Length: 370
Ligand SMILES: [Zn+2]
Image (cartoon, rainbow, N blue to C red):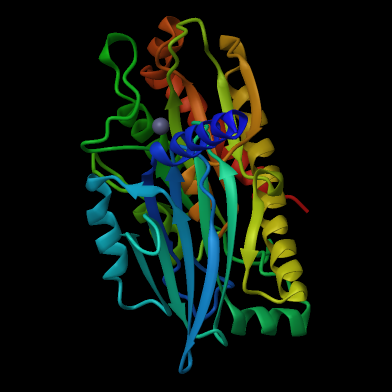
């Protein structure tokens, strides 16, 4: 008898431990694709958590609408994100409707509800670990009409060299978001903008059309950046950032892109053959991003060779702007603002223009490859 009591106490202890600490949503994004009629990817909703959540899915049919309800027990939404959830919910001009809310029954938790016409929209959700080691869930929405057209024609959505080249350059941070602050109070947003403006000018000189997400010290949310990029009929997206680290000896350039291995599928409303077709399309995009990352990274390193800048290589990790763009995308970390020598180079016009020339020659070699 005594033994059972002990087991009971242990079980209570475990449940108090697992249910006592709520998981919080720390970030929330809605990446939109403005021209949904011609795009396979219609948009994505991405949530970040303090720890990996469990998700259960139920579906309801109401007339011609389907409701996919994703329930995450013991997950709470921080009060400063409730406005973001409201903004997403109020988005009326999408072919799907999203609500993200805390519920109390049948159990305390978070409910993400997607309402859509199942003939037009398919949904998959994937789990991933982000660059800052937070746990993320991405709900991806697909256009099933475009999907069946592509399946029938066997066509790739990835654009070829025949398309007129147009490039989106994203200077990271800006406005109230300074980004990293390094030696001598150098702000990341400044360095990113100065290099980005030079990249844009050099591309224009080469007769390449450029869209800059920001061209001044302007605040811009991450999902506004991706939505901006997705509405341009562009070939590629390059996001420029500068690094910071507690260890002041860290220096060098690194370039990020996504890879399929970063994601694990949770559930999908797509049929198996639809899902494998979509996966192949996304893998094609990731392969192009990887080629772009290597092209940009190697020519960047070549361009600053005389400074003996450290090669921190091409890395694969989930950064928000890479997740939300429908075109091949890379994120370049131009150097460490917390490294004494590198920070002084990063604000030098001559070094900035070498960085810009390196990025542009990488973009050109990617665009002109066979
Ligand atoms: Zn940054």
